[in-house]
Amino acid sequence: MFGRGTSDDADEEVHVDLSPMIDCLFILLIFFIVSTVFVEETGVEVNKPDVGASASALDSNSILLAVTKEDKVFYGGESIGVQGVIGKIKPLITETPDMPVIIQGDKDASHGMVQRVHGQALLAGAQKEKISISSK
Image 1 (spheres, one colour):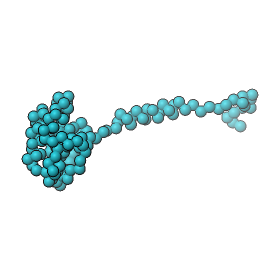
Image 2 (spheres, rainbow, N blue to C red; image 1 turned 120 degrees about the vertical axis):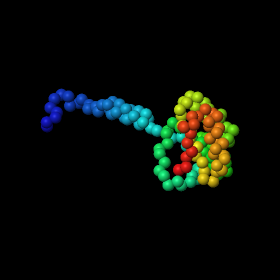
Image 3 (cartoon, rainbow, N blue to C red; image 1 turned 180 degrees about the vertical axis):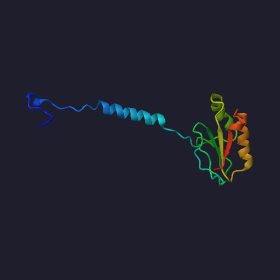
Image 4 (tube, one colour; image 1 turned 60 degrees about the horizontal axis):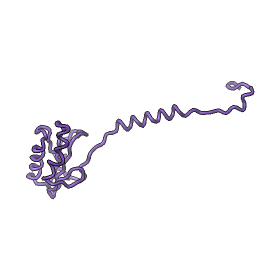
């Protein structure tokens, strides 16, 4: 036998040290938690018009508002109405002034309702160049 000599240590138990493997697993767990991206959804399905152009990836740090075909305004799955836009997004904009606001309008929603939401976002303090209307 190559690995073990014949000695009086035959009764000695062999232990496998799992500490390095557990350390490695915790490091991997921390890496995956830190690198995970959470996407905020509006909570309703909006039927957007097809414009034929590829949409750029949405910034994960943005405010998403949805206008349904019934002209209801949603934020975070909650119906807030046009009057609730300022109350919901003003604290977020005061915390991060350059945060983009994305308005997702249904293709059957009235243009006036989408523009009213746009106006409320401006009144809440959003920068004019940071407000976008999503069509795809």
